[in-house]
Image (cartoon, rainbow, N blue to C red; front, side):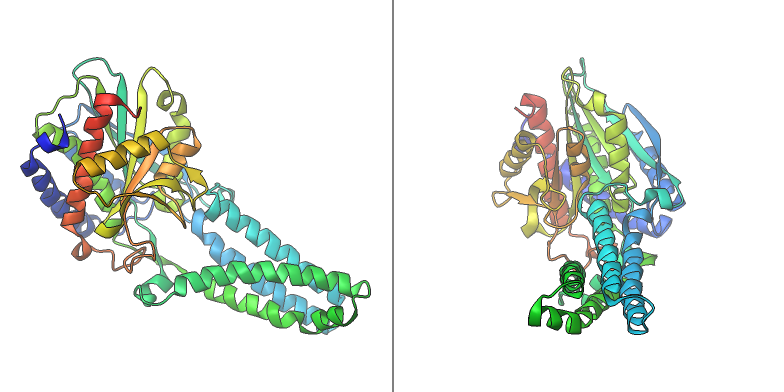
Length: 425
């Protein structure tokens, strides 16, 4: 079967179903912090739904520190501000030499940038050891084929929602507070390190007028760095959780509706198992998919059952409906052949403007699978500016875009049918 032969009425009914369900989940279960009781309750609700059209479903537990991923923004802000202020005061009062104060600033900034790279750029679970662990859950539901399982396609969507990014909420998508704060914090910290190193050499040798200038004016710039870090400190509002209607209940129901649509259309694949994976730790730094991919790596990379993972994240802004072949700020390549299959499926479904794209800042769950050598890619439709609803309270059910959800559903069904027919090739 091809997507042109798939019942349009089934897709449209599932879009309506998804919109109703997303609205109900938000109203009934409230804020869904990663690994929270609300998140698990919403997953249990999904399990009851999935059990109606899947052959098997189960939960898998893993350990997660929900705040470890983003709480570092507050830690590094305080550390740099304290280093700059304390270094200045202690050197001006003669407690420590002026060059030592620069060493304090440089070392602190280097450590903080290292933590930032490990956590936010590379998504390493670097800070988790310092935070309280909770139990997170991955919900796995499978629809078996008629015959022997020779292929497996996993449709993955995360059900947890993000802590509010305060600057994005107040910027309303019109002001570049996001870029100014992040770029200013990282850029000024790097420049402070360079200035501090120069001042250490200037304080211990003769660098002429240039050295004198740097020694006299260096702390002016260090205070600029401290200012940017001061703006970073309130960035994450841990007291407010986004409703997560688009990011990512649209992806959650893309996974659930994939198997529901096959069931409603009476499509039974010969040798391809279709799996819906509903995880709850993407907003905590991909912790859920990292745990699942690591635990099941041998199974997911076994040549005897060709397996591919299609992660769906935010089906909202139609003009940005793309296949993300590059991920994790462009540092991770998702599987090129499977990405091509999904892109071709999108065009086959009538979406000619769909193209390859890169997650230029941040990451999707697909990157966690790709890092473990698992075939994966990501389908998403979100304004990369980012969108005004991204990670804040505006991401509610009144901002859903059914037409984009429908487009995503068509691409997913087309991808499943094409994968069943020929694999990722």
